[in-house]
Length: 228
Image (spheres, one colour):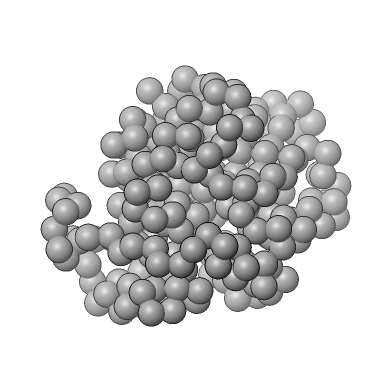
């Protein structure tokens, strides 16, 4: 696949991170009602591919309201550790409440911040990383930086599971319409389709498993990679 063709070019991100943070802060109390049920089955498939094990150290980037953090914390058990990173303070507050309600707050460390710079995480310290509808929020030049950071903090053989809206070449009509809305209403159509698998390969990950699905007529790719 040629990522550079006009038809397949990945749309740019036009809103600032400050605007993104503000938007997610406003949505944080309503996000599960708006998008949670639609995204659930894709997240669950991604979690199954990652297959977090008892005692492991796992990072979720873009944890949102904390749905996946609960699953990850249960999987790693009392001997494991989960770290969550999200740009939104509002999402962090909602996720913290959810974890406390589930009795899992002691297993999870939540951090506000940007995955393009994860200097608070020691290199080679994590067994796995999970991202669900998050990688496609970063602008094109940042995606390689985020994936390089993921590779840095993973142990050799560590796993990266990514759930992402994806592009086909040529893109279908649903993708073209969605990208128009992304360009003109970025606070509502915030994600946009990207080449997740190819980006992971270019970042040095060995692709272990890929599945393709559809959400609202838009292709969704669920990719498992491992650090070489």
